[in-house]
Image (tube, rainbow, N blue to C red; front, side):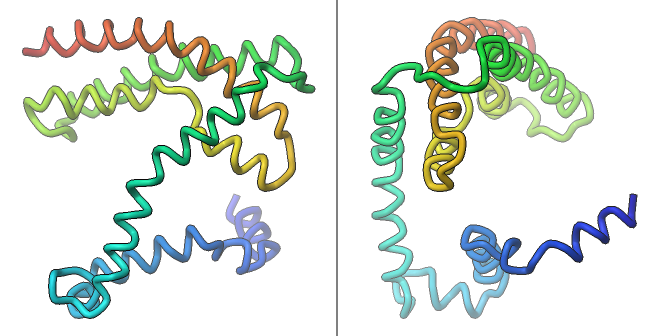
Length: 183
């Protein structure tokens, strides 16, 4: 096993690992963990506070932009994809029915192991809810940028969002019943 990991590590170029999101994450850790650097970027009198102000403006525009991307992908309806109906149904069932059950088990075990904040039901609800939502909208954006499997990603997102209306409603009721039994 170690040999396989070493082979993959040797064959993977460093430029594939240090993509902009990875580099930005490492830079954010550095800025957040080194107090002198953090004081230069964050704070009212920080010399580089314009960077954080700009990022806050971009963050405010992120959700509407993502909704536009989703609307564009779903506007055409389910396009023909090479996945086939059985594969599409399997992915939708796994994502919207099986994964929430796995999430309930994970949150339950984390709660029994005392990893969660005691008595915070909203925290548990958010943890459970993240397992229930459809695949990320950026799945389609990444497929579109790479030019690979765009129709398949669009079809999967379409069907997941159609059936998420029902599965999300059912699981929210289950989560409320489950969380209210803790109180």
